Image 1 (cartoon, rainbow over the protein chains, first blue to last red):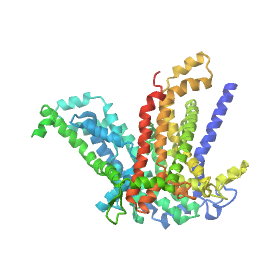
Image 2 (cartoon, helix red, strand yellow):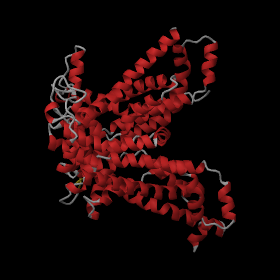
Image 3 (cartoon, chains in turn orange, red):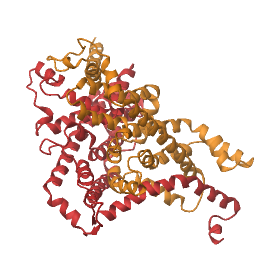
Image 4 (cartoon, rainbow over the protein chains, first blue to last red):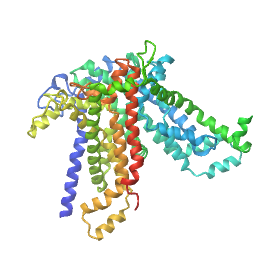
Length: 273
Length: 300
């Protein structure tokens, strides 16, 4: 009897927290479906009086939301691909190949792990200006490609793989690149998937860098765009929430599809993106 | 030729060394341009005064002196510390509480999934959602507080409540991180310790403080350090929710760097604050290395 009571209390507490954690999402969905006139109703309604799907239509037609969305997809995709490619190559060398200076270079990589982006953003902006890349896709993509964490994560993963397969391939005369691309990469799929979801998050949720480097409207990423909507819509919370919902939907969809990689990636690397 | 000899004892080793350099080259070049050079440049810039238009002028330590003589800098530093000491303890304690509860629950998928979800959405999105929650007069929070008989403050427009509002929002957003890290730590504690404790008649509370907490300290410590470093970099929430206001009550260090650099174009001064931030983060990291062994019990 007491056992059951404990169980009930435990679930009750968990349900209260569940409500607190999901409540803002409910509020987001509810507000995004309200008519403008109902946004300021008091007491606030969780289920809108009239459901206004036109809100979504309006944010798509009155602003180039599709364009911003595609910008984000393009930037995220290229950035993730670039991270995977360059990090896995470097990580393989750090994990398996011997060359003079290897450990020193690796320590240099590790040392930069703790450097906050906010320290380098000013010279980075100046470098971009010098290259003539302000307000460009290159500027959005390239600085994010080269992060030490990606190299570090994959190196740890490669080290954990058994060496025997590579050794037999090497005796058969395979080149390092063939070993890397035919043996290591297929075995490293879980590691690559973890890095992909992390890179996706870093890129999709990035705000400060796009805010600095993007000027023109057509170059907005979706996160930058919704921050600007705040100024345009002002009190039209229903539209602002509709746009916000669209902006964060991909992160939730990818999370649902690749839940374990998110959890492992973030728990193992201890990264706050 | 001499350089080639240095690469290894024989051709096989040299071949491997060349392959090694070629493999790291693409990443190293990018790393050099986008990380290493900016880092050095930012250090050098912090001794200069530069508005991007005129020639940079060397000012020595002037930027660093100026920093501490400016009330706004001191205020942003204090605000950032306020934020950190609000968010870190709350996320750790609540994250630990939830992790323990969820770890003791069999069908916990829905809880795990939901508690982690806010952590993954863009901070900008989270801030916008909370802005509508904090909405004065009509907002859901005002209503809920009113229901339980609390007179709601004017959250974001009250200098005393704006920072707590940002802290509450950020705790909601980042509790998923401490929760998931601590849950992974809890799952690493072997069940046999608890079995042994139960046989010896230890109460659940005794078990928590005598088994869970000591064995979890490495993980808690890790979560604290990462959360602290992250908190010192707070920007997005303040930018979206309050624009640093009211009366600079929510202007943070990074916000200050942003305005000095990209609104007033004081590139040198902004860089020097960036290095100040780096020193704080470096200190936390060094502290972690030194005190890890003292505070944390690894022995089982």
